[in-house]
Length: 244
Length: 237
Image (cartoon, rainbow over all chains, first blue to last red; front, side, top):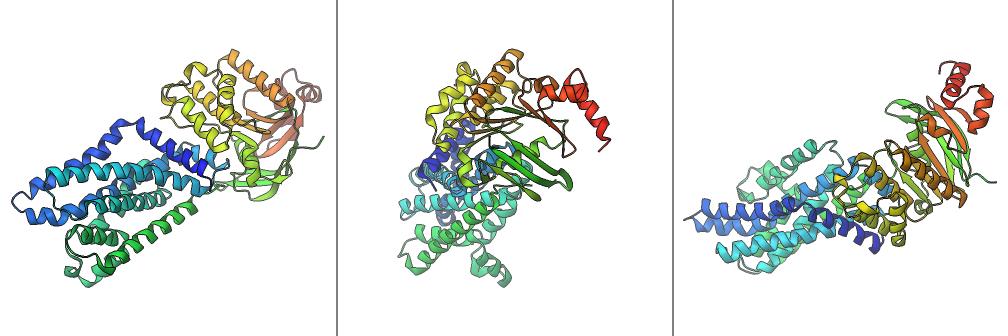
């Protein structure tokens, strides 16, 4: 790995985003709008908003970065730039780390703006708001690594977009956000325990709730970080120097 | 003179069909070698094998004494793919600066821009360029870092005749400076501009000669006719 090349990739990804202000506006604007909508939908039932609003702040970057990174990598494959890079002195980890740095920065901005709106304007009462932003960045990198990995299985952008509901929505349904995990059928609890977002959500729920974090929180963080690295390794394995 | 590219009994299967059926070749530095043949004859597959991005079924390819795809070769080979592989949403200069940073050759950006005559478009987003201009951006990337081996897949398709002439002069200048220049084309009039010609058909080498020798050998007046004479002599593949 080379810091020069990793930095070059990160700068390039950010430059591409800068040339696409509409995507940046959507990345920041859509989650903000959704938080506002959530607040309005649960108007008068503030307890529900307080309960799911905090964790949701950290889940938006997961979804956005999953999509953005899988499409960016797919375009890199289709346009031939990946083949060109693979013929150059660029390590596969340089490419993935460059992506991770760029998307983590975008996620930091996204999570900060959405958190600011939710906490300051909508009266969301999240404890440890700073930790929420940190976890949101972690979830962005998790979403990115899963997105990079699954993009290897997409031939077209249509397929890549469809991977989002296929990989992300079941995880959101089963992570405990919508129904507490201990109220699910046994087999669903087993499935839920196998999905990475369950741990990312649990960490967020504990951070935004009052009280001490406890060992379960650190276990959540460890699992989330481990899955991120495993997904990045799997993603690296899908980047082939030689193709048929 | 020692060959810079040595291909021995190379066989490649792509999509269930044999794209290369036992190709053996030696390509030398200091010359512009043309790789000619109809579409589907295996030109791109052979070039990809030399660059080291092609999964090879049998045989071997050595470049500058190393097996193709060996990591030290990655900064010694400049490769231009057939479709322009650059970032359409970045400017010409941003593209070159990025690839130059990867190659640690930031000083070569301006020279590459000048070689392909794109200085005036340097700050234009690639998406807004014409097809020929995009191809030149892609060519400029291949020239970054003064590579010892240039592998150019149809670099002059669709370009203005004046610019085409200039680019061929550039290829010859680079060869005179000691580079190995391998250029593919399916346009016969470009064959005349090469020092050596490799004629590929159906994954096999049909001939490897100088343009003059090829004409003398086949008694044909131009290379198109020479190609036809060769195909008829060898019989259908």
